[in-house]
Amino acid sequence: MLRAPGFETSGWTLNVSRGGVRLVVEDKVDVGREYEIAIGDEQTNVLRRGRVVWVQDEADGQIAGVQFVDIEGAVPPSAPGASVKPEGPAGGDSGGPGAR
Image 1 (tube, rainbow, N blue to C red):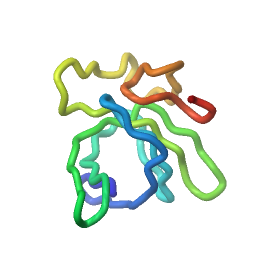
Image 2 (cartoon, helix red, strand yellow; image 1 turned 90 degrees about the horizontal axis):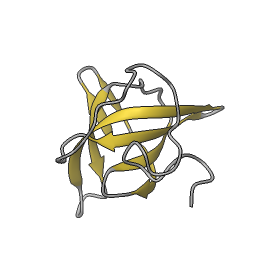
Image 3 (cartoon, rainbow, N blue to C red; image 1 turned 30 degrees about the vertical axis):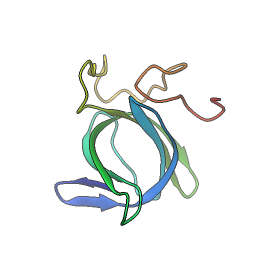
Image 4 (tube, rainbow, N blue to C red; image 1 turned 45 degrees about the horizontal axis):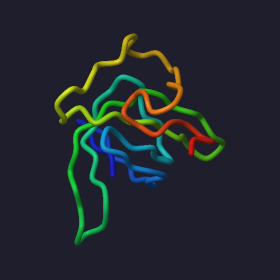
C-alpha cells in the first residue's frame, strides 16, 4: 500500500532491499514524490517512508523503484521529477526490470 495526502493505492512487491523496493501499482505514482509504504500483510505489516526514483509505464499500471528515505545515508535524487531508471543498485533498489 502506498499513501500520500489525498492518495492511496495498493500494489505488489517485486523485490525489497535494505535501501528500497520495486513495486507494481495500478494507479500512477509521481517521480520525486514521497509516500508512506506499508509492506507485508496484516500480521507482518512494516511501515516505511520512500521516494519514487523511477517509473516504467505499463498497459495496466506502473512499475516503480522507491528509495527508502527513513534510513541514514539516503540521498535525494539528483533531478527531482526526472523519470530515469538507475543502473544497478543505485537508488536504493535492486534495479529495474531484468535486474537480478
